[in-house]
Length: 324
Image (cartoon, rainbow, N blue to C red; front, side):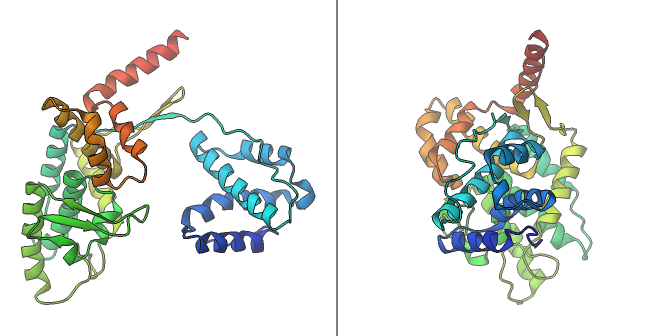
């Protein structure tokens, strides 16, 4: 954990500790505030320099996308609100600084056929030697849960053995992104893959007690660093890789493991519509299933087009830019 370096180090640490008392974690906040701390240190700034112009200059040094810049500025604004409450500042110098216009984001979405192909690719490449089979199967099972259940990448890695309830075919997801535990039904095909993995796991561990459902190489949790390269290998091997594109104010995301979660949501809504039912009415159930903190996050999936339309969207955006 990199320390703060400016003269505000004590106040920054106090602010993070204060946020802890309110139930917030400091991981993202610390990294956001570090940009400001670095700028203050480089400018050798003191209290007297904290004017709106100073913060406008700070914002101009940030090279991230508008959304990230707004998050950084918002974190610093919150810090100065804290300083105002402590009466170290008479007013917040960032209060009138407007947010930058954010880019629209269109995530990469796999079709169901592409998802099936991706899982087949990973499964076929499981090595059958005694040294590698169990760990390769563990990696495959993690990706299968991302695909079949729309989990966040961290969620299957934290599962404990009793989080899978065999009789009900459910998964109990604890300690989610927004501290919202949830119990989700598991599709039959995913339940079969979990059952298969548990049978192999039992033979591999031979009575040894391990705290995590998906076992890493050293008996701890499966590392996220095993998922990313395996996913990248499969996407590249299947010819599905597309680079991230920023066209005007629209960002077309590259395929990432989180794209599997987006794909689960979009393909679920597509199936509902195909069955002649209302995708709009299904949103509350889907929101609960995915553990969204706000209903509007799930509603955004209604605006996300299927993967087959992505190419047309990119071409349309490029053509529109050329016409302007």
